[in-house]
Length: 285
Image 1 (cartoon, helix red, strand yellow):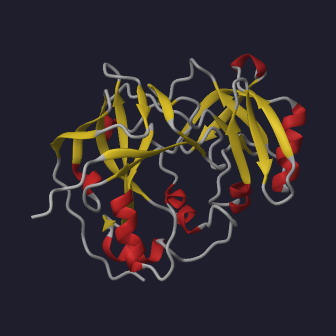
Image 2 (image 1 turned 90 degrees about the horizontal axis):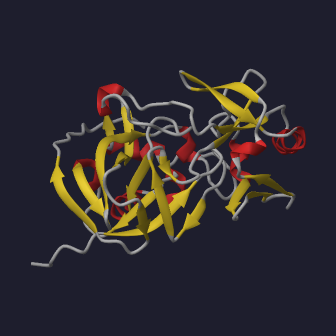
């Protein structure tokens, strides 16, 4: 019998500005809200409601890189670039910002930055930065009270498996990349959808808890390179990854703060305990 392949961390991604392009890293600090810098900024409309690729797929054209003191933004179609400061002190004017049902106070970027983003997206928008003292928490039904989260949709960290993507690509006419799913941590080795069942596990010296599988929306049908919209992979996933009428791929996880606070590509992944999960077949097309 073939021995199971070793589980290890194969990729790390950070998305500093919500719904914009991600940054591939070789290592990352972990904080209570998730990876350092991950989704600490977001674009909002004139009412303070967050913007995303769900309604503005062209946000995929805005690529982000991290430097010591700045985020570098590049529009991939026209090559225009912008630097925005990382330091919280640069966002002094405070505004109300909304992420789904949560409203929080956030620092507003200078007018020139907001004008640049408005031009690139073709509509008025503003960039805001989450304050260090802002409180936003995950759903208490799954995690309990007190688990902090950034400006991500619901949970601090998203983990995905290369084996799961390989299994999905076997069902598709054309392969897709992991970037469709916007994970923070990617694991290689093991079997497809093993991550659904992980309860307590370890990456290097950092300990994590698997919370719930991630419900996927139409964002995964947007090609992150071209911003073109199709039907896949959501259509195919719906045929065998549907639970309570929601299509699942990847696992929402939380960091256990009394453990190591650094993850690096190549770290060994050790599963300490599993949970029971059952998925239902669907005939949805």
